[in-house]
Length: 296
Ligand SMILES: [Zn+2]
Image (tube, rainbow, N blue to C red; front, side, top):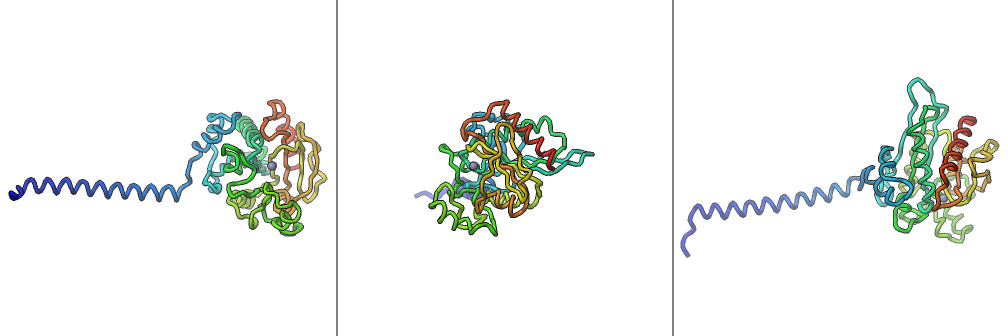
């Protein structure tokens, strides 16, 4: 074999050198990608809007995007950001109170999410500073944004039974085992606040300190009210009439309304999958505002 010409030797070295650099580059990029996907929220607010509008026929991508919802800093079990929008106090006007409005606690109650989006559209136009709002239209994205929407979150927990309610009639888990025949749709989780979605709401309540919480559900067609004093429960909100239910261990009504003393208005729309019409949506909103003006 003839001796290798020095120039040819350098060429071979160079090409190998490039190969090695390429290989290291590829490995580093792969590693960085792995780190970034594990340490960041999987999607941003615009991508979240894309998924929400894909699922909800009545909420368009544009309608969602113009709201400029912000990540709350908490993600669902499957890493979907829990989004929130603030309508803050306006200059020179002290709000009458702080209101926390929540939709989509149960993922299969899609109308409860859409209605909150429609009310946010009103706030975008007419926010006058009368109240200081925090609005979160979708508390349980994992339950709502799957092909067959589910009441429960991705850990099969009923978020409306996962709060801490000391002093309630026994623990939520004992109540579930003894009184609901272990109904899977009411499973409260192994312990209170085991879920990131309820941990978010607990922190939100502690930090925002709402004077009232409005939580939208379906399909029982009624207004419920949990508070230390139920005398000022709304008689009627739009086409929904007052029908005060019991409180359950682990529920938001029990936690905030009874334990913390923050009134909780629960609006149960008549249909989980059918939106109220435009007039009904407006009527519900007007009556809610009227109640807030009178009671805050
Ligand atoms: Zn519900």
